[in-house]
Image (tube, rainbow, N blue to C red; front, side):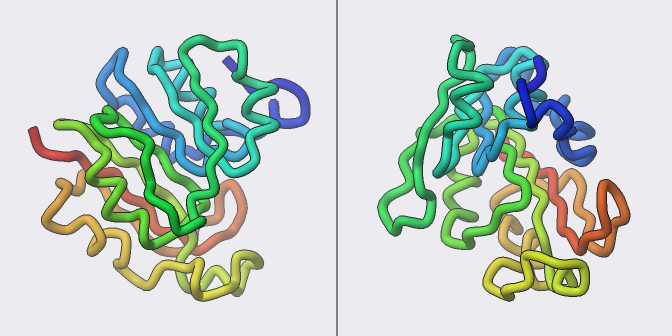
Length: 178
């Protein structure tokens, strides 16, 4: 399944693609800050039931609103209110988004054996463009430290990556214990 219209060319992150296979087959996944749904599409294609969340859901509704395996939720994750999207997800995907108060909640939202796949910008990104505000850039090692003691790190990378465009990124794939 691919997004329709102008979003059809938006390929999933290779990092997400590499680790999405760790999510329990037939399980339930959360695509947080889903944007136009490039990862929602990937997760649905893998046979998962998906909750796709973003503060602007027009593109998500257009692309996935008719799919029974996808629930689109419009939610401003930074509104200060409680974060209530449920628990026991088999997988959670977050890319190009950082709101630090959500980091512990993501680990709590995973079910036993659930996998978190996260990729976002870090310090150094300001040399490549937006985001450049330090509030939206991870410190070195921050993503790994955020999940130390709560999730088993399967893979972690940080640095400047050239594909799909030059960017300073941190990436983690981590699993909640059984």
